[in-house]
Length: 186
Image (cartoon, rainbow, N blue to C red):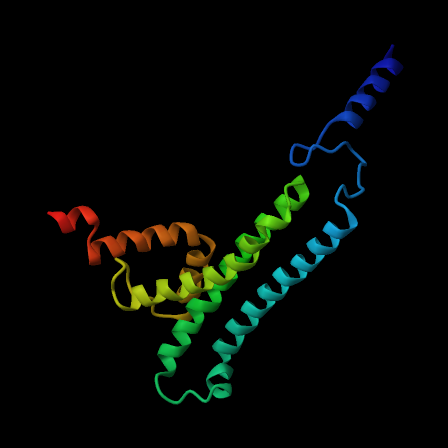
């Protein structure tokens, strides 16, 4: 009797699916066609390259190398702050994109039509990070102006990672500054 219970338990464990991708245990072969796997690899290389680029830009900015390379003489502190916002927004956006990317690939939801989003999203996040910095510096966001590079990087990263929510907040700010259709009529 004990042998039958062990055998039933083993069969049950082998048929248990992983909740994230509905695969049986030891089902390791890709279900994607060769052409799709090639495209997935290219996208993965792109995403990792963008991540490394954002980290390198942050490092070069921190060391002051960008100021030297670009021969920035005036407004160095301002330039460094905005580069921090931009590069950390890019890092936040690429972090979100990579998380999304591995989830859709693993769960079988990857497809070519969302490539535009996967490629443009980190770039838009960099712009959102930058513009969040501009809004903070212009004191249009209700927050203290960050006093060091680490806090600027943290704000830029969060703005990039949560770019959709940041755009929503910018929409609210635009409504306050420029008014809405309803306030213009009144």
